[in-house]
Length: 457
Ligand SMILES: *Cc1c(COP(=O)(O)O)cnc(C)c1O
Image 1 (cartoon, helix red, strand yellow):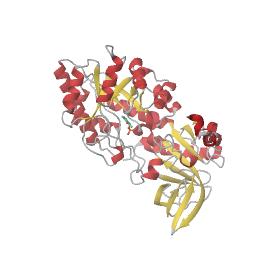
Image 2 (cartoon, rainbow, N blue to C red; image 1 turned 180 degrees about the vertical axis):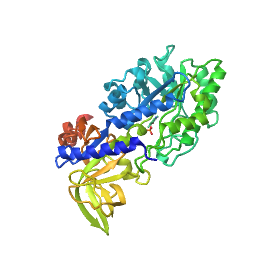
Image 3 (cartoon, rainbow, N blue to C red; image 1 turned 120 degrees about the vertical axis):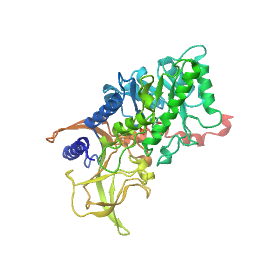
Image 4 (cartoon, rainbow, N blue to C red; image 1 turned 90 degrees about the vertical axis):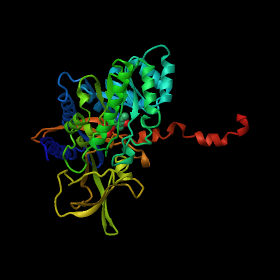
């Protein structure tokens, strides 16, 4: 089913690509760029809020936190903050990005599986919601709090061990997942209950079943388990100790065509049937969506530098490879991308298709963004667009071959073809690449070799 949203998004994207070429935002000087459709992002935020709001009879006690790792760009985070989102962070870098974007401490959720003592101290003292990953971390928190209480909500992340989705690396609720307390392990559930009964300040449970590839019934089953545990804790505590359920993110994204499916409405419908009490109003819900809010709003566009053929296969060599499409290059089966072919003016190409590989600039053979695809004939100077790359692609750079991070622009496009751009992130300069590769320490190893070891002794 094709929705109005997806058709309009495709039209705006076409207008933005042509205009980016016309203005030289994409061109010989800058052969690779990331583009983000701001209206489409806000549309997704709105769809998320609406889907959950309508599930509650009365006021909706729900906070939607954006998972910063999906697109850790400060202007994007600022836009989401303005649109009423909270933010989920899992590293010191993400925390500082979120603060720079204007999220106050009470709008943050801190989820790293490897939180240091310092990070915990900061989060607990500033009212950032913390989800504790394991019992060692809990002991650390005990030590930091002493007789005191945390300034914000604190939960424990549980792994309901409901199984894997289609992509193993994205599945966080397998029997042996590294995340959370594995609830079905002998004694684990009782230990979580005990932990709550001994700590009046523990008041949340957190579950995140996985990301791309996890089907909705599995997501719902994980949340059902966490909800059931919250009910058990509250019964045994004789009061409503668990007041918040953080149900994670992980709504899968459709990378096959333009449609938005499944939708947030689909997820809410699944949750209403699997866990009817979830929307009863007794628990504040926290969500942590990332990919589903941004993926379809983003595009990577590259000039085609060369075309060639090898062993009968056409190959288009572009500037977009593993450095911006890392998962697609390394796990092409799990992360296929839709590819658009445009002419040198940025207009869609038509014509009889040829089976083509689309390659990137990295020096390894697997650096392909599409393999054996029927595509219109590609020539040098054309533009190749990688669709649905607004999350975890241009924002999750991989420094292979010391390739620089490309510029990212947000855009707004009207139906009559008027397009406005805003720079979101400058392209990294080559000087910048050299500086972050130890330029300051250029002589360090030669000096170490010349140093006589005896001097150190
Ligand atoms: C990555 C992650 C998310 C976001 O997942 P998406 O698939 O991008 O929605 C949410 N919560 C946690 C704990 C995560 O690690």
